[in-house]
Image (cartoon, rainbow, N blue to C red; front, top):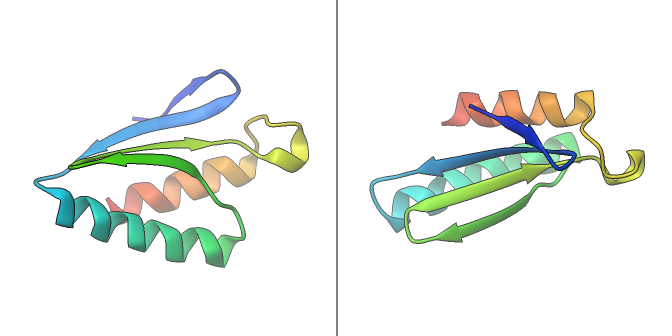
Length: 76
């Protein structure tokens, strides 16, 4: 589940291995590009952490972030 903290939506995803994690990140990247909304994220081996906020709105959580979070959930 997504958590709202420090003016960001945050969620961690765990996969079987690096290949699965990277494939997920590729799907998210294509979706984010289509939505013109790009996440801050980290990846270490099988774990992907994603942080969403809207820079144009003063680095706060907006509907744009919630929409991307929903799209990411569907990819997962």
